[in-house]
Length: 108
Image 1 (cartoon, rainbow, N blue to C red):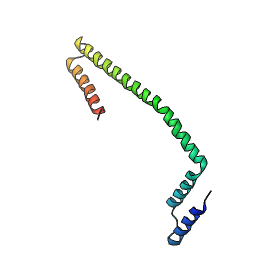
Image 2: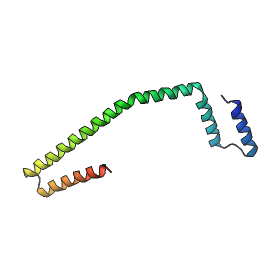
Image 3: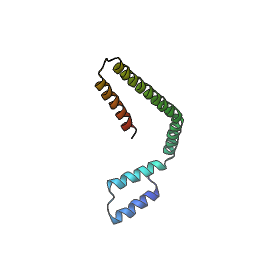
Image 4: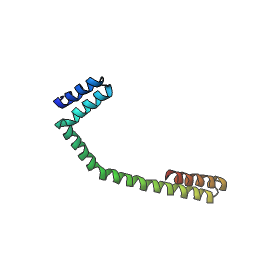
């Protein structure tokens, strides 16, 4: 699908120096983007992505909530195990410190 304008650009370029592979790739990409079918395909892609954005944000929000619930459950479980002396105080402190450190550094 080369147009006359592209051929002129290539001819001008060939007078100065040979066309490199990157230039050929860029020319062919430009020709493909000028086609009506590719414009329609890009428009459909953007529309599908725009329709999916609310679903993605909802899923991300649910993942954040479940992450908070699981973290709270683990912290409470470690605290209960430490209180009931199922695990030692030092182990309980180390586990809680690891969780707090993980939470702190995951937000950076």
